[in-house]
Length: 261
Image: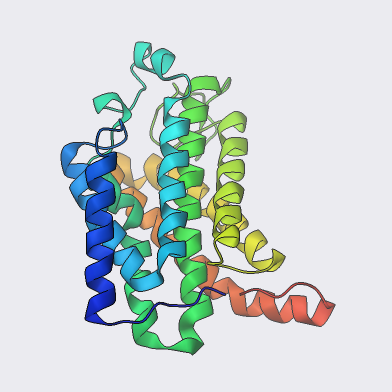
């Protein structure tokens, strides 16, 4: 299990300095807008300060994997009008739409004590796994999805429609969530096969719920932007992981299997 760093002024100042230096070196990479890099530095400081370098590294891996899958087939998606704006560069709204829930959980970790640590870390991992699942499903589904249907009624719709799903995109979502869960496992944010399975499964469920929101509520309410929906998706994933962990842990313990957390 991830060990939290000391919560003192020196540690937080070091976190700020390290992230400022890294952002200054990395900002020429075509991943974020200039404002996006500033907000990524704020996020990085929160993560390093709250979780240490391992939690920070897990989210850097999330950013790299998400940016990589966005570039797959980018020219074709651009020709079809389905590519992300700004050449795939993310802005502040994308940073916080993806990471607000996770950063909030990270800030709670030093405050709530040891008893809450396993659940909060599961929620943290699930929030980013769900967002990477969504990114994989959306980007691969838009480019390679053969039969795109609306999740509510399975009526064929054009690729890129809010609430649209495809077999290819759903399989990619499963892969993206499982991959991010593996990153969290490798970085020590979560531990054990049970945690990996829970985070992977919750990521897929939250992604399908996000498509359901897109097909229903987002079509009716103009204020429900993609960034807000992303935040709702990550919140659903975190809550589901934290709610399901205790009963799943009891079940696995009874069966003599791998525990969650």
